[in-house]
Image (cartoon, rainbow, N blue to C red; front, side, top):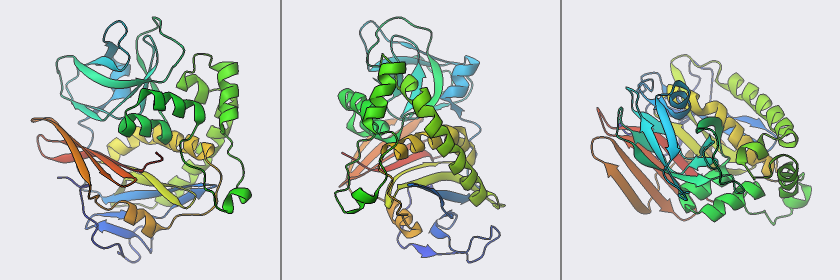
Length: 354
């Protein structure tokens, strides 16, 4: 099953007043729809809701769980090798790793460069990564999961641009989104995480430019956590009445621009990442001007349409298929598990900033 390889031929209101009490869902296919939004300041989440018969996700191990249990190990590949680590999955479950996840330690902190599915008990294999700690190359503790996913501007540079210099620049600048030159700029509040504030955090608390230390610094953390708590309350309230449905992803809008979505094969996988993803979306929102427009649900539905553009594909027979599609400023990555049946584990769709 490739649930999120769907074509949206028509975005129509469906279900009327369902058991959830939502009157105006937008349907994507017969068992997936866009729920009511959760909005706070310049950030809006539209939940992607699936019928309860979605494929289970419990049989997949995720990186933070594997590193914590010791079943997964990440080690340096060799002296002077920056953009590749070695990964060992010694568990009895296939391991799913997602682009943007942060591992800390080693000679410098890194982020995962691309989605990957690693078979149970696989031989050690190379893992594509990017450095997110510019000022250190020295032995440190073993790699551990930072329980962090970098915010979208950084993740975009790694997953789509695949450029180490752009990754470092996005860490320091906060956002790579272009400034809107319209009259709304003058009315928009300044971004709380504008680059001068990030520069102060680096100077005072993160001299090696460690992503983790910058965005967990005292000056940044207080703004982020307040925002996260409020959005989590609103998101939980909007999804509290679900009965025979489950949340499997979100569409993210900054102001009136639908910009990002992460969609998973099951609610188990979504909730394994939700806390980290929520914080990453908030960091991005705080780095962008605070436009108060709200994107519509129809805009969110149109954003999820199947792209028609250049395709790049990689496959490990019997394990996974990774596919990237680009159409104009829109880009999509899908990771499919091939066995025991075809399942789209993760679908990432973005409106690129560069």
